Amino acid sequence: MNRATHWIGGRHAAGSSHMIDVVDPATGEVIAQVPDGTPADVDRAVAAARAAFPGWAAVDPAERGRIVGRVAEGLRARTEEIAATITGEMGAPITLSRTAQAGFPVAVAASFAELATGYAWTERIAGSLVVREPIGVVGAITPWNFPLQQVVSKLAPALVAGDTVVLKPSEIAPLTAPILAEVVAEAGVPAGVFNVVHGTGPAVGAAIAAHPGIDMVSFTGSTRAGRQVSAAASETVKRVTLELGGKSANVILDDADFPEAVSRGVAMTFTNGGQVCGAWPRMLVPAARQEEAVELAVAAASAYVVGDPADEATHIGPMASEQHRRRVNGYIERGIADGARLVFGGPGRPAGLDAGAYVRPTIFADVAPDAVIAQEEIFGPVLTIIPYTGDDQAVEIANGTAYGLTGAVFGGHDRAMAVARRLRTGQVDVNGGGWNVLAPFGGYKQSGNGREFGRYGLEEYLEVKSIQG
Image (cartoon, rainbow, N blue to C red; front, side, top):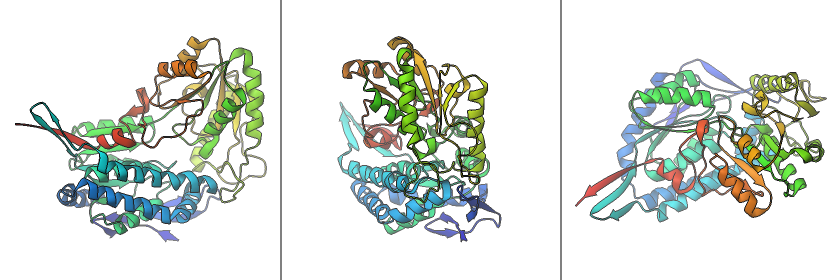
């Protein structure tokens, strides 16, 4: 069995004798163990990061960018290993693990490597020289749903900025962090610049958030945990960026291409088993055309194969853990109890899958905008179809949750763009606009603060200094 270690000061570092089991959610078998880290382990990692900071900050940004480019290539070379690791630890289908779980981090790292040479690190404003400098030591706390992507989205801009990093990966899906540490070292990142401390949120995450030697915390996870990170970090008045929950709406206007809009909406709800903060679990459709949307959604959902995530034919694997399976199943039961119309799926495991953390992909129609399943983040393959009357009501419903991360609008271009501008959310796709690795990503309201990717993502990791004269 694989027994991982911490990575501190450029080498493997043992922790306490107590270990955390890493479980394959498709089988329930323990496949690895990682250390159950402590605040003392965080202290060691922070000391290493602080010692490495002056030297790394002094490296020319263009050279830091070239090193991050080598990180991208190192990750690309290990695509199959990374994909198999993520499929084993959190159940993403292997095809998705190759294209997204392993592929997206390469694209993100490469984009920041290129940005390093074109970014305006200094500028003149009247009689002042404005200088952008690294913020210092960054504490990164990341989730299990995209375990490598979420790390690289923080690490790449931090490295280009000249910061050093202490990472706490999710204890549910921690096994790509050691791979990344090896790649980072091989790319030429000096010892101590990147450190990994395994463990739980209450122990390691809390210690990172509150640590006086950490200058910034970048957290991705639930809104509830984000509040706790913010509260702990406030004692030292450090910068905090949060990428939190979502309950995004896919607004389908009456002049949209319905087959395209509905099929994309189902895909954006079911991808990665629905365990995507930027998913579109609320499908808003004109009331007069709800049955058409239901028929199209059920037809699309029927084509999704649920099963062994290592099978090339699988579209939806297990939930990332048995605990999460029970949570998602509970929401499906709540939807039925509250009177939503079940049109596909339902509670319980899919036929033939009596073991493993599997749920049935599920679709509800006639969902009230204020229903629990329409308001709370389920984080599973559960689509709620909500009827509306008129564009104004569609916008009101779309904006009517505590979240504001992503969203979509389908319809005639000008009209869809007008609706998109009215949505209180950080990113909106219009008629299937694709992912842009240079465009800022982040939320309004309780979906967080700060941005990832591109220039806006880099600037989160920089301080700004004015030099007069």
